[in-house]
Image 1 (cartoon, each protein chain N blue to C red):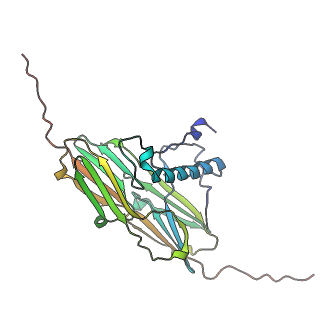
Image 2: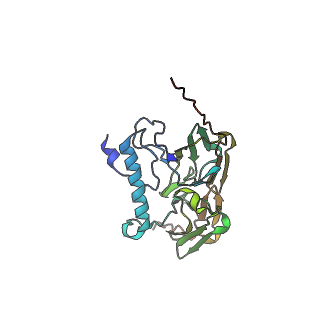
Image 3: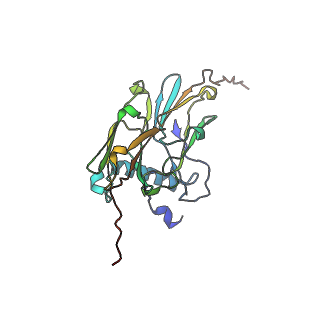
Length: 160
Length: 127
């Protein structure tokens, strides 16, 4: 076992397994999940970044130079159950996951998926053209693109 | 029904280049069938692989959604990789009639139980 095996890495995704029939790896997976669940219940205490984590709505933010692209994992939600707002340099994604199954309370063997309302706000940089923002939904992943505005003008310095 | 833990060996590397995630799953069992609901956001429908080998159900899928080429990642909470999970059934299931649908990043698997159980009565001879 290497030292790196002991370092818990939390990047939002959890390794499903380490290697086959390794009890330490299995224990680690269980502990990772336990901590993930615990940390999601108290996001404000533990957050160290400017992206506060809320329950079960993972986002990626990337930059092309011309636009900011935000993707969010929203499995089980459709276009009409998701609301996207941009105000005061903040992008707010909220949605509601409905329990669309035939309700059979006695039949549950395992219940890990989460239901109900989720909301996430993402700080945005200055100078974005929010009127030209577009969004699409594919395979449970919401993609929002916000182009950068033309406000930032380059000022050339004259030679004297 | 239990989750089966021994997946294929990945050479003992603790940190994979592409992460493998166990998707969150709900399982509902009724008298004649078992239904699974798995959250697999971003899963490529063409890469979905569902196999039932005897009593072991394996589900794998590839995720290609996070950052396309030309985009500089600013903040990442999920990344490209694989979904993988295995379940072991405690009774024989009808692998020929699995109904799998993928909608809005949720995969629904409807698996009927085998009606004619391979139960056989053994006659014990008295010697």
